[in-house]
Length: 299
Image (tube, rainbow, N blue to C red; front, side):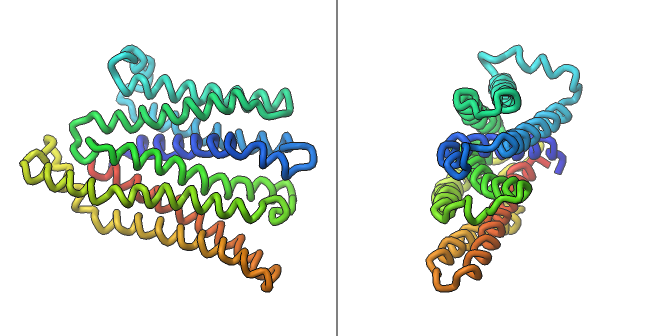
């Protein structure tokens, strides 16, 4: 598989965008967990991780170019090329996120307008990323399934990464994680990841029918690759990815169920934390495998 730079770019960029979106949606509630609002060190750590993911993604995308120094030329066709639009939107997202980080650094507070603009630019960027593949001659990508997979990954990676990152930052600050993360957040986390997964799963029969109809009409050859053939060749790997993601959702659900076992006291609380972390890690691994399958057809 020779598309690792693009895989890392889309995966890490969508993770960063998902983290930004989750912070926008939960910033006010998160501020209520601290006595004086979100602490500066916590905020800087969170935004720094988002910037690092986006930065590594950008570097990966540049290394994919045959001549990296010609990268500015990709901006010349913004009115006719989804690639040019994606480059502009990625730069816009990274700029707003970087400004939000600098604002937090110097002003010692979160800039909701800058963070909101970054989230909006990021969501538009995901659409542009998906459109690059949607409007190509690779038939397994020429479907609305591409949009569902990219947006689904953004929400899953954002929700799972959010919980893991918040826990890591609070532990680094030696905060009481159990005290600061209400159990209702577990319901929200499970709901976002579950919806992201099952909406895509519900669409898969329609997607498989599209592939079958295309193959039946002898339209499945994209020189020099039979993309549908390559897609079918990795059915087992794809099923493993879906399976890991589904198991992760059930693990998250079980962690939420443990919260109802109040008679178990601290034992249930510790187990719940472990299952939440395990479920989030499983969701991320599942998304990575599905993204690998997405690019594997272009070997």
